[in-house]
Amino acid sequence: MAKTKLDIDNNVRKLRFEQQEMTQQALADKVGVSRQTIVAIEKKRYSPSLDLAFQLSLAFQKPITQVFFMKADELTAQHKPRVKLKAL
Image (cartoon, helix red, strand yellow):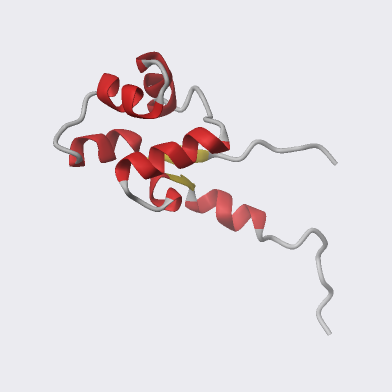
């Protein structure tokens, strides 16, 4: 069975602005990556490692599910039955 890539979104930009308009560079320094990495995460061009995802959630003092999440349509697609059931 082929792997499908999940459509994972994030609130990194929103959370930066809630943190006294933290700059991308300040966040990058806080978690030990380059500013370009933060830019790529915000634009969904890069999925961070699990370690970096947790570091970001700690930097914002938020649960990881408030920083990264699957889109609603992705959640429903994951829970569809694989076979059709016949009515009784």
